[in-house]
Image 1 (cartoon, one colour):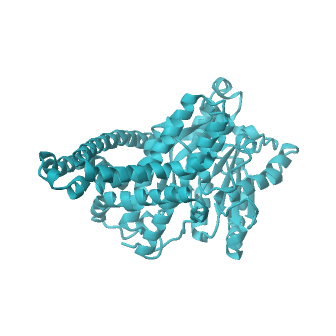
Image 2 (tube, rainbow, N blue to C red):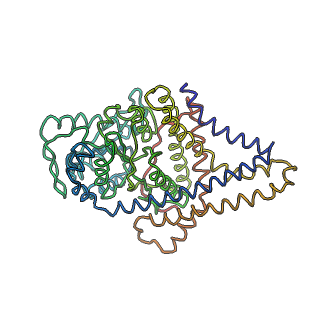
Image 3 (cartoon, rainbow, N blue to C red):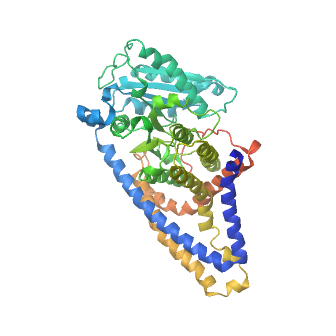
Length: 525
């Protein structure tokens, strides 16, 4: 049955495209009507999601302006008692795991600099820089340099080295993060639960350690890509969300990923792809009932221990962890949107074509999240405690999401002309054939309202401008969005379709973990 579930996504996607091609050939009028209806649906969906984008942006800006440490101090004892069993915010510790492979020192340093600048007591932070043995001496030297520079600023700082060639594992973030979490539990958390705390920095805000009482329920785990830079209010807001959400021990917390650390070094295509990814995740924040974890996120340490950490043999560990938790707790797990950004690197490499290749590989790796479909469906089949309604809702949404990823852009931008091209002379003489390009063109022109709003928002979200940035560059940053149809197909549908096909073929076609190269380069424009 598991094998059937692996084949299902590719079968649906390829089947849709093949059937549409066949209908365009044999029943051109039917295909033309379907294309018009589908384009109309896409227009309405674009406008609908644009409203979600605007809402999320507004909430994000509001959260960035608030002093969340002050909000924590303003929480009354009664409100905490009602919401979270008398937990005080000063009892909360944060475990931050940053898996690292071969990223350069400058990238890692920038991430740690953002951590030490935050508006939150550093004495409540346990930092783990999780390197790979496979990365060699270069990674060890960088980790040692980071530890010398930043190690004394936190409650605890730990460097772990994930061994290579471990049976049952694939090299990647999931196996590295699991090893790091196990090591910090063994070396820091469990010993501290049985004896008083050993000093530790107080940070700029004071707040001493709470007698070394690192209760699993009072620890939040944040796993960040090593290029992740946080805003100064991130951990204040995260702690506030944890204390005030309905079920803190059954909740993950998801920020908004902004791929802007090096956005001025990226070529236009890379900028469009990066902002498109950001906007999609912003829209999802406004739909928490469909939200799952992605890339950098946070969760309770107790739950992580209970499920046995991240799976060590998958590529998409960031989304898989949500389904692990969801199935383990019989559907009693949700993701709380934080409406707060974390900034990461856009995909940039030395040279335009190398950047394009890396973007494609990264999108294909994200598309490989389809490996969660068979895991989820098989888990639903075995778990009798999750209501059928819940199973159907999530199964439909995840399958429809990957199907749309692989087919929508192709249908809209590449197959809309099929009835005219292959429908035959009989169809060419019809009024429908004459009006098809006009109707679809009009609908797609209306959809540019959503693209225009994205273009404007991308300008607003740009970080502080580097030296030499000229005002007329803004025009280029707006005009780059005419490339969006191209990026939706080349860096969206095609890598998504390839990932699904590889899963269906399985065996040697399965994808391993591909580490996105990171660095600082001159602009490729």
